[in-house]
Image 1 (cartoon, one colour):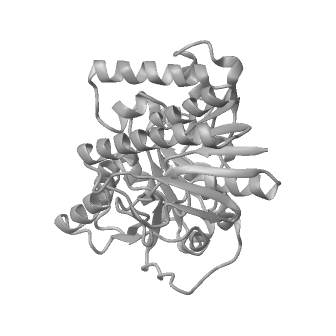
Image 2: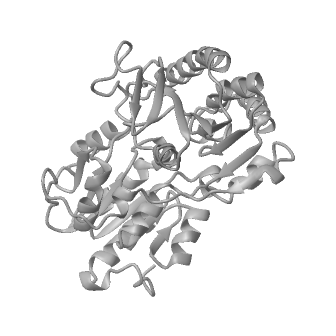
Length: 380
């Protein structure tokens, strides 16, 4: 079967659609990916890529075609808007060519933000009369207001109509969080199309192989590791407020990753005298993460106190759970419920930096042998 995957992000960026594309190819399918020049998460083109560099390539048997985008830069609202618009415009132009020149059997839309990623796919679907699978990773327009801070009713209304139109044109809608079903059905009668498609753990993260080369040794003390994107959704101001409350403790906050809020964390640590407790290690390949996780005492995640994030299971949660380390979260809703059901850690309400600081202080005083994923009774 000839499969076209449409996504704003693909290898060398780390997203689940990489696994899907490569696995489909292994199973004998002819896979093509229509994506953008990689710029995530640093906000600039990855080394070796550019307007005239590697716009077409083949990786692990998967053919990749890259559309021009304006890099997101530091992630300001204007740069992010230009990034979204440029991707939508140039990928739509490419879709007209793809739809007329190439023939596919099905289309899979990997819908991270922006939702406009579905427009070029819908064009090809219409031109070729083939089924379209819409894999929802971000709810729109809810994400636009929750993470982007846009509350203009006209803009949100337009994106609501666009999202509904894309759902209507989809033959199947995949959701990674069960809570997404209600939001999607609020836009129309789509329940029969919706299928639960939970996140999985990448092979590199599930590996027991420990790599020492190039892996920094974590500082002495109780190490709280925060891995992944450092953006608005991760509620870093409240995380840093908790770090401030723990200034006189032996608790370290270890950030592994990148994103537009990384500079905020670094500046906050400098300005508040937390440079000996807050460490930003930067981005590492997936294969290095088990080695980093093994040095942490607990793994931590946070999401903003917003209704949309209460419906979300962060993709990093499965990776955390597979590590065997206790998971601490400052989130509401489905993600917190999953941690409780799996008995793999502790949660405090989203935005409650006071409760987070108290919880971390309690856990840090336990014997390290007792801080295990199953040892949750009587702590929170």
